[in-house]
Amino acid sequence: MFSVTCVAPVNIALIKYWGKRNEDLILPINDSVSMTLRTDELCAETTITASESFYSNKMWLNGEEVPFEENTRILRCLNEVHRLAICAGSQKIPLSWKIHVKSFNNFPTAAGLASSAAGYACLVYSLACLYGIPVNDQLTTVARQGSGSACRSLYGGFVQWHRGNLDSGCDSVAKQVVSSKFWPNMHLIILVVNDQRKNTGSTLGMQRSVQTSQLIQHRADKVVPERVNQLKTAIHKHDFDTFAKITMKDSNQFHAIAMDTYPPCVYMNETSHSIVSFVHDFNELMGSSLIAYTFDAGPNACLYVLEENIPKLIYAINKAFPNDEESADYLRGIPLSNLDIQ
Ligand code: PMV
Image 1 (tube, rainbow, N blue to C red):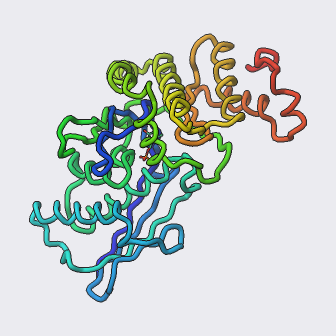
Image 2: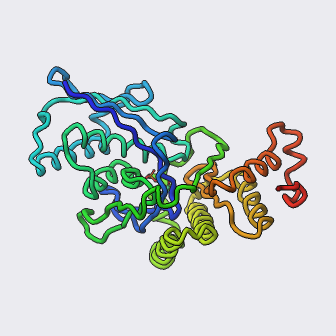
Image 3: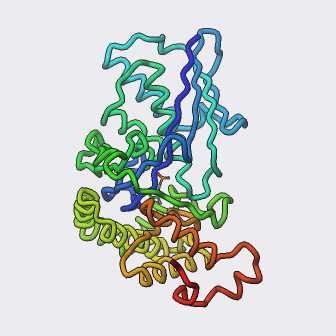
């Protein structure tokens, strides 16, 4: 019997992946860029045990058994890792042994907090450790086939997923832009607006957007390539103001496309929109963009902020969104400039 346990963190996109050109291989229509959180933050933890005595492959997610053999994405990840093990000549354990996978998320699943990214990255990374194959760009093509954004969680720091041009998908890989040490005071604060499952999953949402949105191709062809370059330059220069503006514009464009989809995919709610206004008011008051919001396929706000600005941000959040409902209602609509932020 062999067993491995690994953790993989969530990554949150700054330039969003939205839309596939090949549903089967999960090939995107545009590049995306994200930041991977640290391994002690929002994470998936997976233990895989392989044994000669297991009769079938099985999987448990947060303690509940989930179908394995019926799940084409999980099967594909396993088959691809087997293929890489054969290519690498690795004979660490026999490929015929069945496996048991136990995975836990330390945060709400499918609430737009990139749980599938961490989950599939962790599954593929654990499989690679189990079968003794290297973690490299090629392995990101396997994670990609579990859940697109998972390929970015195999690396830390800022990561770019290149859409690639080949039909085979072998050039649709994730690569690290810089490690997390490059911008160590960069933080992410997540405001959990709602931790329930999202109503339109990303697979269906993307499918619908590609079929019906008139804006999506324009974004992929004309907007994203330039934005990716500008964002990478901002990261390399530690230019937070530009980083923030690009991130917020890209989140807004992704949700505009979600709304341009027919029927529309509505991911943000009223509270999400109040957070957007709050961030713009805060930045205006501070004289430059000190906070950047971004929203995935759900209402929760991810706020990028430099460490030195966290106290100001927390103070302002507590003022603008106080815990007790009565003062929250009263304060909503009062400009931040009247709230005396230090
Ligand atoms: O990888 P998926 O299928 O969970 O899609 C992720 C889509 C977004 O989170 C909205 C954007 C992104 O790039 O992560």
